[in-house]
Amino acid sequence: VATFSVGYDFGYLTGYLANPYRSVSLGAAPLAEKHPNERLRHTLNGRFEYYLPGTRTALHAILRGYADSWNILAITPEARVYQEFGDTFMLRLRYRLYAQTRSFFQQSSYDGTAKYYTADPKMTEFHNQLLGAQVVVPLAFLEHTALDFAWRASVDFSFDYLWSTNAFGNATIVQLGLVAPF
Image (cartoon, rainbow, N blue to C red; front, side, top):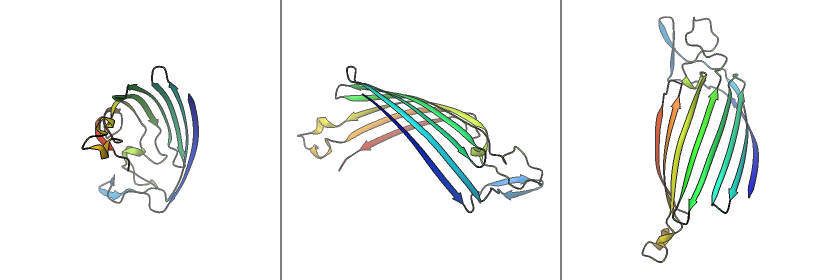
């Protein structure tokens, strides 16, 4: 069984788009950053999913491209493998790469003549890689017990590690979740 989907998103942002709490050093005095008052965003994404019923394995390939009027270009390929182990649990493994260019006005330092200036690390050129795993445990075993109300729920635990070249640095991401349909 295979599915393929493609999508496009457009965003038009206008108004004050900088962060009033972030400052940039221009000479001796720090000033609030200044961004253009308009930003056009384009995102194109595609997803291919393939399920192998004999092994209860699903393979997902995801690709996202981004471009905006601030000259930021980004690409995000991702691969996921889902493996069911009977009705007991499901394991998801994933790898994602993200790479982007810098905005046209981002610089490491400013001389005071720049029309726009920023200290936002998300405006810099950077890339990161994410490697992760998730385990999902359905709570179907609760059916016909005192906790019967939760038999359609599931508990999930995920662990991801992010290697990044931007100012935010590397990160460990741990999540515990409960999905409870009602």
